[in-house]
Image 1 (tube, rainbow, N blue to C red):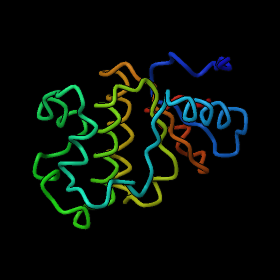
Image 2: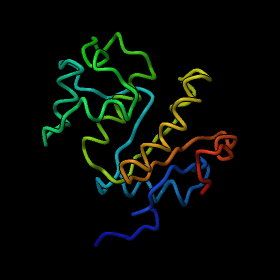
Image 3: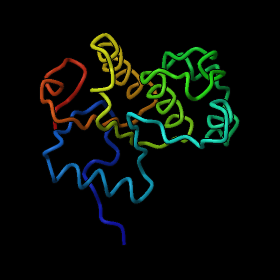
Length: 157
């Protein structure tokens, strides 16, 4: 029997302190139940496949990629790059794209902000808020720095 969690069915962009064991364990449960997808600083792609082939694997329903790419602010040219040519921010955006294509209702972003520039963080936070609203998903930013809890884009849990 699955243990119910209060975090399911919440639409929005939320900050969760890395030290909040209750919330992080609930989110871990969602991951183990395959109800959530984890976005990491390093994209765990299939190494022998191209970036486009990795994305195609997630696009099982054959959705039009070009209609989803603007939501993650990723040009089609990024999918044509070699995996080793991707910048850290592009890897995160590709993982957001994969999460949207997988149609999961919950996305967890854990420990990615330290790999980004200040400008990229300033782009990522409102981007996640917009994605949460447009796609009716819950996005949880798990981070140790509580300054991200007090941005106009996140709700603190």
